[in-house]
Image (cartoon, rainbow, N blue to C red; front, side, top):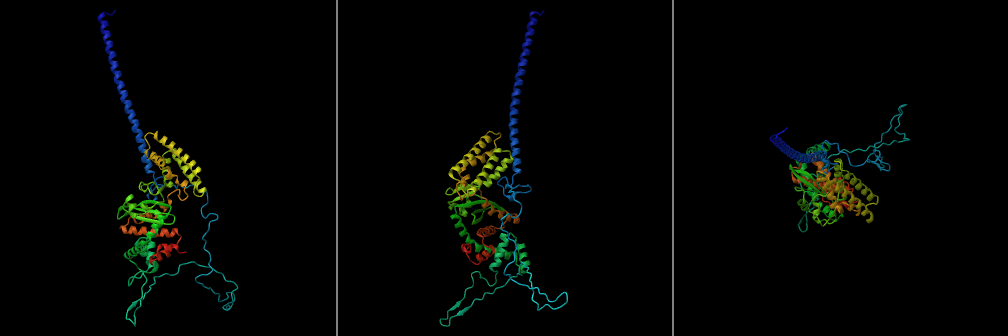
Length: 482
């Protein structure tokens, strides 16, 4: 049986052990809390890293079909067109107007292949009339060579008053020896339109015409061509300012090894290209078209264009569809619904030849609002926050009127493809030449492409029209001729 003293010692020992256990439990609770805190932080970092990896993977998968990147930036990725299969067989479709080579009624030359002797008996057939003539026609190029035209100006003295009078040379005949407007037009056309470099152009002319022209002379001919064409840009500018829809865009270009930009303002009938060192508002102000334009401006929502508040604006849905494709590839289901909506709205407008009724347009607007509202709610609850997708949705919400303007206004198209088509050859030129050595060369390229694009849109013969323009004819007169 325990004594009182032993019992006291036993109780004190138990109290000490309880205190030790209590301290241990407290310490373990602190460790657990610290581990939970660290685990929460690690989970948060893990989510951020997963989102970062997803963002980087999406960046490497970007190409011209799912982002704003131009086709020229595509490298080894096998990009797939966003255009849906039509179901038609390759080649000309039923009802297509073909261009089959056919015999003409009045050929330029006739070559008669006569029968002189009978192969059976050897008798002469020279005086025998043929009972049948088989006709075959060959379309070919005639032999070509450079011709020299000598212009002679008479100088006379009046026998009555002794005043000296002289005739006038044509306006394009300015030197004792020079190349004419047709050869200059050929150099301008092949260099700026067919994008043939000067050395290859010199070789081509020598091979075809047996005449040697140095690359320096060709560069001077192209420069003179630019001087003759430049005054016609004012005619294009005036026509653009009078149009009710103006497509605008820009693309990069290197001039003397430095980054520059080519800006375009165009319609289905006119094209105006201009190079500038800046991409933003300074460039468009210096070019001078957008500050004075008061119609509807179609663009890709680049921040410069909305600053021109005296014009109304419309957004390009081709850009939106490419961005939506990128979001779909990242797993955003709302992007597929918005893609379906935009394509269906486009078909509805085309079915009515350009515009919907006000009631029908409001119905499409309600669907548009509902898709974006649900997308915004879904994106705002995601962790981490998908900033780019959310910014895209908010942009469509904020600029709803501009995005859906094509539903109500006949002259507003669904996309800005017109501007992209007119800019495309700038990137082709850059891929061929790499850079322009001087700004004047870039200006010459843009002026010539603007003129030729305008001629093509008016269905004018480019070669004949260039020859007329280089002899002093104005663009408006060339376009007005039938």
